[in-house]
Image (tube, rainbow, N blue to C red; front, side, top):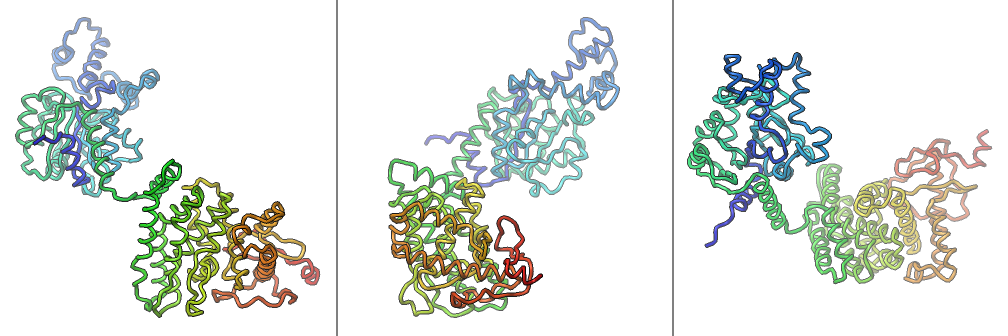
Length: 625
């Protein structure tokens, strides 16, 4: 039987227990970037001391220093000799660990492939702890470039105040200190013989509770770290140790003690392969796209392809079925706290329908007549009424996804000027009207306006805000283009409502202009231009909108505009919108406009154009004087 490669074994282990593994990086993980080793830095500092002492041939730097000063070289004593202030120490050490202009151009002293791979694993929640014997901050740099701000332990005192490990999103521990904390830097054999008790306690927790992926560490010169690994007797998770060369005697002894797996690879290769394998396992485990952005990207690729997008067809079908079968349809319809229950169910619906709305909008915008058939008729299954009795607000909310999909598709198709699709959305999907015993059926766009299914006076505005990210983020429409498309579809839907013999079914979310004697929605001027440019018949009429009758369309538009003006005028004079969801029948056309006390319109669901202040009609203004 073929043996599984070690990096694949580790990937399976990490995937099965995300967050249960720590990475341990030695000097070999940083040297590949051109970063000097701690020993190299210390030797160079000794040479500088020797130069200041006017010594000539010094031979081995550490031997010379011990003979000259009768003590071993430490970073503290070296920096104290060469610098006078903490600021000078920082500048001196930065020259070793931070790239200058030339090094930056050459890409040196930058995170290696190993650092970036670990950052990828951390971003996926797979690795949450990085232990390093290096003074550099390449691990932190890679993590920040991946969008992660790590918690850093660079001094024993940092370890003392650390929170419980499982609560830390990402932890980087410099077991030998780092160059930004000179007093914490350990390098000589004497310094590495034992750690501060606070560091030992932290290492004991990590080695006991986490698996390990080790790379770039020889174990030869770190007795304190070897001891920390040796005294841990538990084996909760596996250990993998990567090194391109045969392990040292000390490392081999630890490998045996921890029953670890040896990997003949360098740090870059080992961690990069492991990160790739984990990503592949995540992709396999992801039966459906887990984010709306991925679903939309997949839909766009399918629609742009030369072959039939079978996978997109199936995805749409699954999404419609999933929304239709949500538990909300089987929920109790009589509850003690109607407001709280309504809010909870509405929030659930918005979250559950996010992907479907984005997919339908994408298909309506980029699709064809063929792909339209994949989803238009499915709106009817979302519009099916509940046959139970109970609170009206909860019963109507069951049909809210139908209105959401209608608007998502309609606004997208209108933005793309796919007139046939717009007409189909407004006329084809039908649903029973419960107030007529289900006969005859009515177009979904006519019967199920936002105010009907959401039972709120500003329902249209709420739905507009809900759909805005779909268009501005996934379809890349500008905010202005989305607002225009929304208002134009809103106008066409309301004309369809009036054409079917109904009336204003809620507060429309539309900007308005104030003419000489009437308030008009901005979209009305757009529709007038559209009809004027097509003297032989607009494509909407050719596709059956308003039964293809221009006179019927204009009659419905006129009646709507009269009601819109009447409603807007009431708002301008301070009257509230009626509490009922559906407006009463419109009064006779020759009835005078209601005159209600003066006031300013602060209606939150009706933006103004060009300003937010409503003025009184001119005749009322003169009488007020």
